[in-house]
Image 1: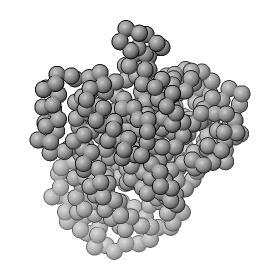
Image 2: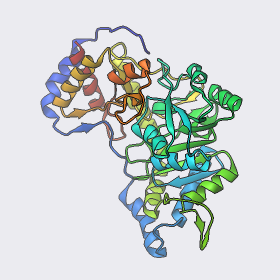
Image 3: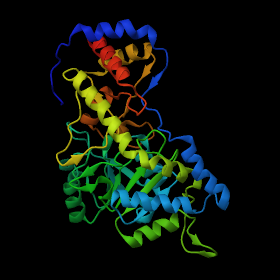
Image 4: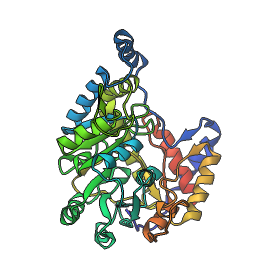
Length: 384
């Protein structure tokens, strides 16, 4: 939990790390893509070779969309090329082509760059200090006549205050687009977390807990908006009838094949990540700060973020881990309100502080518990 003081740990863990350090030369990165058995992927590839359709809404894309819709309990699901273009076409489908979009500075850069790419202006609202999602209590003061939408992020798979955000959106007649790139398989109050908002966007990039190599999705509340978005992702035309401006955001059959091959393993993937996360919790308690999980959230264990006392401590830990071929990542750094290509600087002190001292530890299915224990031992050794 945030704010806990440092506690001492037995030296046995540290000594164990020292004794083992020369035995481990394989690099451990922050993540490693899950791959299904090759023969299972090849079985889907064989279908592609049999029917000869490689893209343009092929049968495997349709099959995957149906399976993921059922899994998430949603009605309007569009599989697209990646999570970034998902945000861009979500803005287009909702008619947000200018004006201001209220968003968070604590996310991956694609959240902000997508808004800018669509020629809108990101307006930053600082984050909550406990779970790092957008601070709902600070949203209304940033609303102007130019505000068109709110784009929060379910950062690390933790839930935003979806009720509070929707209340504000209804009051000011604003659209809500959730960047839910981290939120696939998280469940809030009995509903998939990606089912909230006018549109939620997902990422199925190879680094995510569930992936299609490259991929993304839009989950849309309104049927008419979903049909509009479906046109946008296919150049805006049906056969020879050109209906509206569009772009190419279609997915290939090969990406869908990976998604279908990975799908049966989803529960096992989450269960293993949970085991590793609980082990990290046990061993690092009192040494690092952790986000506070919301009540009524069934978490997906998408990441394992830790917050250090200050940036110097973070860099010291990184140096120690890197020397042992372990490579965590600074998710998310820098705070996006400090991007050099923004026109104006908007102070977000909480995000700026957290982003300077937060990192994600390695978390993936192939990570051994002994490796997680060694990572923890090295962190504790460095902090001492």
